[in-house]
Length: 367
Image (cartoon, rainbow, N blue to C red):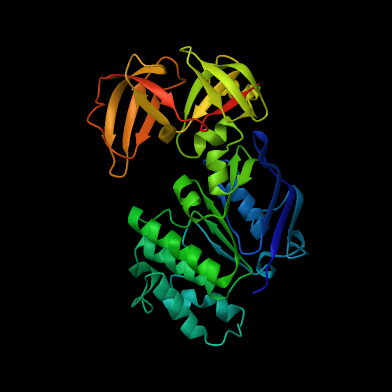
């Protein structure tokens, strides 16, 4: 299959409601290339599903442009776009068997696929549906029904694969297994995939790149590692993974970082600065003009009287791969979370500690 590119330019969607116009998507610009697995990530109501539906042709565009492989998709009906889509709801035909549902797209398109029956059975097997081909949707669990819808979307080798929260009805273990299967099959087909989810771990684990949405705006685009390590706003820093915020005063610095002082008087180096806009400053309750952001794994403990940010361990949670500590301190915007790979009997609930910071892992947002 040839490599294809998706270009989204100034995409906007305004809904006309009894209460007035509501802008669900605002001026989104996006490029997805080749066989990328690209996730649209964000909280409920952020515009990610509306964006996907406009690309699929299931929602009209208020303004902007969507082009795929050189074609203007806005001029094409949904059936003419050759897209495979998996919805949150299963959307299966109740009167058709599992096999017939999975093969439906091949038959409607009168596919010239060499052996359509073999292909459908291969997909059913890959998705854990062996032995269920003759059953009807009413005989399946919700998770099994969703897997049939995934097989149907992939059976005819679409040019683009669109998935809207496809794993929402699966248990935790099956979700992990299924997301890996979806990515594996997508890469084998060489098809561009757009994946909508609110699950950060899910997006981080399967995506080549992620677009983080908020209130209809595309806040940041990048690889999972880039978005995690180099967030460009307080919202993205807070939404992707876990992070701690410490009010700070800028002592010196430029675009590549500098030195700040925290509320306790502790001074530390920061790797770089990002802009702190007024709306986020007020939303997150930043008292001054700067805030230092540090991931839980980049904070260490020292003796209570050592140089650092003083605090007291309120709770210790053993989570298998990590131990999570919750530390109360007046010098952070909220309770501090610290994560260590190995448990230590030295630190326990109720103990006073001093928080220290790993060099090179402190990001500062400033006005």
